[in-house]
Length: 359
Ligand SMILES: *Cc1c(COP(=O)(O)O)cnc(C)c1O
Image (cartoon, rainbow, N blue to C red; front, side):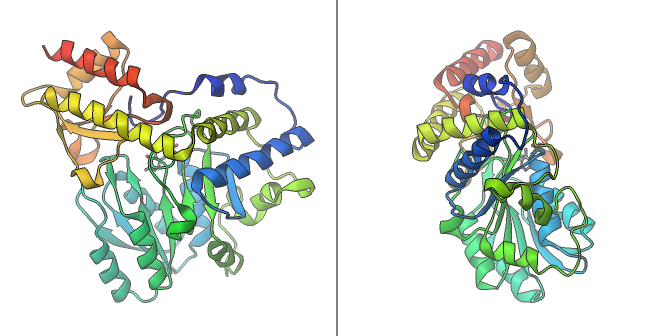
């Protein structure tokens, strides 16, 4: 019950152990077409360029930045936690300038500040933000931010690593442009893969680049030749065949349950955990309106040594919860209810273990 990786669904483990076949084998190619359709479902998009990057969420992040950002560009980066800081790193390593819009940790991205930054920097073509900040448990208004960016002629790069499969991520309805996620959070797959999707406007932007993408491996113009679909697939790199079996299965699990049911389950489990935690004297860091059900950031009751208790939980109860990051290190816990981990038995187990430890 940490901030990822989450518990892996048993059917996903089963898929992982199947025989490895060639990544250009017709059976595998067929499965890849299904993975694409399932990923489109997860993201609620019709985007043609929807695929799985062979690498963790961080590789998905980098794919979006290296393809959309060119040397000399200006990019607005919203930061309200750890991951916005990584976006800034990415922008700068692309040879571009990051115009930072800063918000306090534990608060959502402030749309008014973003609007002011857009007005003050008319050269900006891309706005980047994190939908669900895993470092603080905050949800930002992705729909509002995407509409605002669009109104100023900008594309968006959106981190949905922790949001996808836990709360609504409506790529087409909200008008998101370059979106990446991760396999190991609410999708409950093994770590190491990153679903991504690009709007037609983002693809157009990539095709009109002046400079070659600096990363050969993540250059979408090349990767598309494999993911392009059908018989035309050609070798770019050897796809992580077994990991993709696992990804396929975790997306099938998601589709079978249905997105709405999955979101509801996360919320129900969150409310139960919240009630139990508050009875034990824990306090939530984030205001109710912006709280993520899948990432419970809580202050411990006064006077407790968080690290010692966290260690005991792991050693005595075999239960992992996350500590705080940055300024929140030593102050909060981050309790995950992600994907397959968001279940009754986990909530009960966690609350029972905490009750015993604290008494
Ligand atoms: C976990 C996470 C990432 C990075 O994913 P990895 O799979 O660890 O590379 C990026 N952004 C957010 C918001 C995350 O929670």
